[in-house]
Each structure stands twice: as C-alpha cells, then as structure tokens.
Image (tube, rainbow, N blue to C red; front, side, top):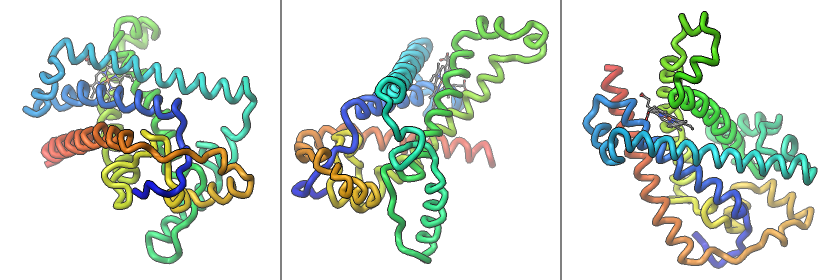
Length: 282
Ligand code: HEM
C-alpha cells in the first residue's frame, strides 16, 4: 500500500471499535458453536476441547452472545442519537445511506456488464451494493441467531410464553436448534468466504484491507473504490475535513498481526465445514 499519498478517514473510532467487538464475538461464537453442529468429526471435538469442552465452551458462547448484544445496542443507540436527537439526514435515503437505493440495482447490472466485458468498471459511492447486502444480512442474521439462541439458552421460559395447546404440538427449542444450527453454518460460510474475499483477499488488498482497523484509506484507493463519493465531496469541499495523517507503521503491523491469523482461522473453519458437508452429501 502507498503510504506517502494523502489519506482520508473512512471509519471513525466508534465504528472501528464496534467492528472489533463483532469480530471478537463472532469468532468466539463460531469456534464454540460450530463444533457442536459437527460433533461427529474429530476436528470438531478437538476444537470444542480447545475451548474448555463442556460446560466452559458453552459459557464462552454465552459471553460472546452478550458481547454481540452489546455491539447491537451500541449501534442502535448511535442510530437513535444521530437520527432522532441530532436530526441528521441521509440514514434512510441518499448516497450516504446503507439501505438499498434504486441506484444500487443499476450498479448490479453495470457490474455484471463489466464482469462480462461489455463495459468499463462502474463507479460507486460511499457504500457499494454488496456492502449494503452484507450490512442487512448482519442485521437479519443477528436477529435470527439472537432469538433462536435465547430460546436454546432459556428453553423452559420461552416454552411457557407460547400457549400450552401450541406447546403440546410444537417443540419450540427443537425448531430453534435447527434454525440456529443451519443459520450458523450459513453465516460463518458467508463471512469467511464472500466477506473475506471481496474485502481482504482481492489482489490489491492482500493480505488485509486495513481501513476498518486504522480507519484510513489512501487517495488512490478512495478514487478507485468510491469515485462518486470522492467527486461529490470534492464538489461540496468536504474532502479537507477528512484528511488525516497516514497510519503509523506500528498500527499497520498490529492490524496484520491481528487480522491475518483471524482470516486464516476463518478459511480453515470453512474448509473443515465444507469437507464435512461434502461427506454428508455423498
Ligand atoms: C447472538 C446470540 C447467540 C446466542 C444467545 C446463542 C446461544 C446458543 C446456545 C444457548 C446454544 C446451545 C449450546 C450450548 O448450550 O452451548 C447455542 C448453540 C450453537 N450456536 Fe449459538 N448463540 C448465538 C449466536 C451464534 C452465532 C452467531 C453462531 C455462529 C455463527 C452460533 C453457532 C451455534 C451453533 C453452531 C450451535 C450448536 C447447535 C447444535 O447443537 O447443532 N451461535 N447457541
């Protein structure tokens, strides 16, 4: 990465801290949950024992779930403060919004045309359509995992909430277990492949895209990835406020020291899950 060029702040300390909480808690949940879903395999039993086995691994799983809830709580406080208290615009509509806009649908078509070699690479704004899909799937996935996970955590209490006539025929904890298990495999598989590959494992980013850790992107990166936002901010004279010093060598080193093993662990877990699923399928 070019360090001598102008750098801009893309993610502030709050967003970086929230993302860090998500990484730590998600990895903890995967490493203590996935072994249960694949309990028939030696690697899964080894991984479960690595985290203390029963009941310690289950305890770690619950602590990580609480960290996820805390990160979600921070996110909604942030949204509430900005939208309802500060009356800031642009969260639901416009180029700064993380929600899908009509423009994103055109971007998908333009991207497909580019993939097929029919046009030049499209220019994007602050959030690219796949980043928006990831954000929405994180929201949705966390809700599903939280509800089903809480049912597994407190099965008796949740069963009491539904009418006894329904509870007699619907085994709520068993349904929650099936949803929790398969959504977990889907979520881990998605994050460790799609998210990892188009964020960190692109040839120009290998081995890690540092922006979510140092908060910074260089001007060439900014123009290459989000030219529309760059041009928009240049016109509105908003670029000056975003200029920051380049990340220190130490910050880049720490980022790699943390992120590279995390990426490798994710890819190895995906490989193990895939091999087990292939065995089931055959
Ligand atoms: C966010 C809130 C979550 C809560 C409250 C939660 C809670 C639980 C609970 C109580 C169990 C039962 C196993 C035990 O007692 O240790 C469990 C199992 C499991 N969890 Fe979670 N969990 C959450 C999120 C996740 C996430 C994000 C993943 C992975 C992406 C995950 C993966 C699993 C798996 C694979 C199992 C084993 C299911 C089976 O037995 O096949 N969990 N979870």
